[in-house]
Image 1 (cartoon, rainbow, N blue to C red):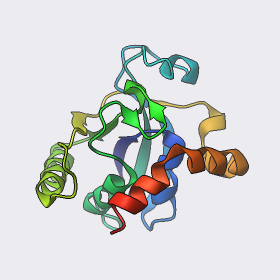
Image 2 (cartoon, rainbow, N blue to C red; image 1 turned 90 degrees about the vertical axis):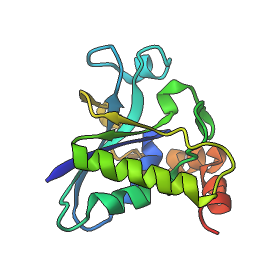
Image 3 (spheres, one colour; image 1 turned 30 degrees about the vertical axis):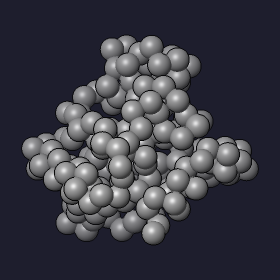
Image 4 (spheres, one colour; image 1 turned 135 degrees about the horizontal axis):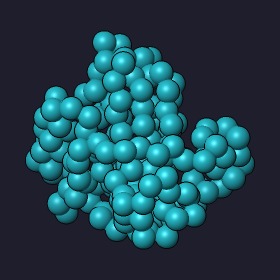
Length: 172
């Protein structure tokens, strides 16, 4: 098993694209990249801890290679927005790929370069590729939020602008 860690704005919205895929053995919403030990959601959402909301995915690379995870990751995001994602604004909602080894780094860098060269976006791709650091799982109520609080999740996602952006920029 390997780990993959992706920041794509609100971690609630980053679970569903990956969860039903073969070879995915777990997805945990959490925080990484900051300077506060064991941060809480209340601390992270202020933007003052340096953390970003992420999903940490445990996967079997023999069944679902890292390249496929990257192919799913990019279209969940606006990789040109360094101020957050959709309605979620602030550094805690920026995009980033946290790599766990050199192979992941090479593949992530290559996929970023390919996206930049594709001409899909007129602005630069600002998604950072960073080394994975300490990951802190989010509070229990954030785990599988889309299942536990389906109505609120759907309402929040509907007003976020994420689905409209995906449809306009990735599904064409």
